[in-house]
Amino acid sequence: MKKESPIAAAKTDGSLRRPRWQLILAGMPLLLFLLVPLVALVFRISPSRFLTGVMEPQVVQAIRLSILTTVITVVLTLLFGTPVAYMLVRKRFPGRTLLDALVDMPIVLPPAVAGVALLMAFGRRSFLSPLFGGLEIPFTQAAVVLAQLFVASPYYIKSASAGFASVNRELEHAAEVDGASRMQVFRTIILPLAMPAIVGGIVMTWARALGEFGATIIFAGNFPGRTQTMPLAIYIGFEIDLDVALVLALILLVVSFFVLAGVKGLLAQRLTIF
Image (tube, rainbow, N blue to C red; front, top):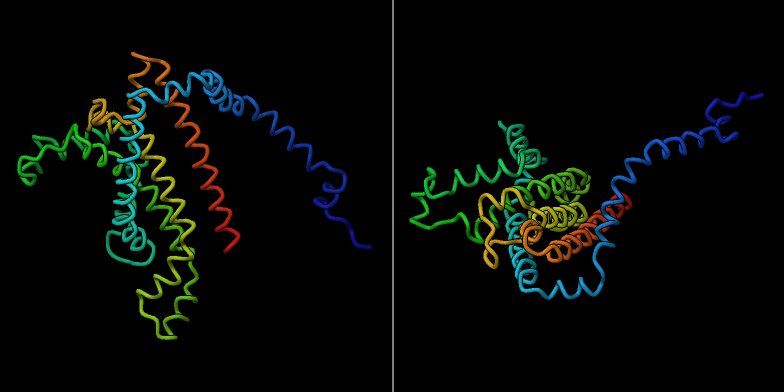
């Protein structure tokens, strides 16, 4: 008679299910700690006050500027980040590890340090200033875009790199045998198969750029209508008008929720495909 394994026996008597509830109880304090502030933010402002606050000029300006700058950031990231992502996973060259570390650096670097570094590099007295011909970048909308690009583009590069790395090379070789050029292989095979990761990277980059604060306030300043994005308006709102801060915070919370839901859906789709 075949002896039943301990794991099978545990499944039969349900002993594997008991630790699950123990883990939930052990993790409940942290889960509540993460949930309660979000719930408090949602219920802190009434729907009528929210609708009134959305129409405030400061809120409208911050939303408009955030949308404009983050869209530009995403476009620049897509144009210049895709070659970097492809190169990191498909090419072997000296210094590749250092390049990969360079891409990761803005992710772990404190945003305030990133802002100071951008100011030293592109400020009026920087060593690059003669190349700009008197053009001032700090405390302009261009500075907002550069700050967002610096801190957010690595998220796209890492996600797109993972997508490119997951493509089956045998499909590429088969297409090349059939006479397809490298560009055709990239356009018809590599790009479609990596698209869920690419789109996920775009969404994460946009969300990170939308929530950028530290580098922006140091490099671009906090000028309403010119460089004041939504996070910066929240910062000022605590000193001037709390309702403005609550409205913008709630908008960012909702956006973050849908971004996470969208990225998780794309990742689930990717797992289904592969």
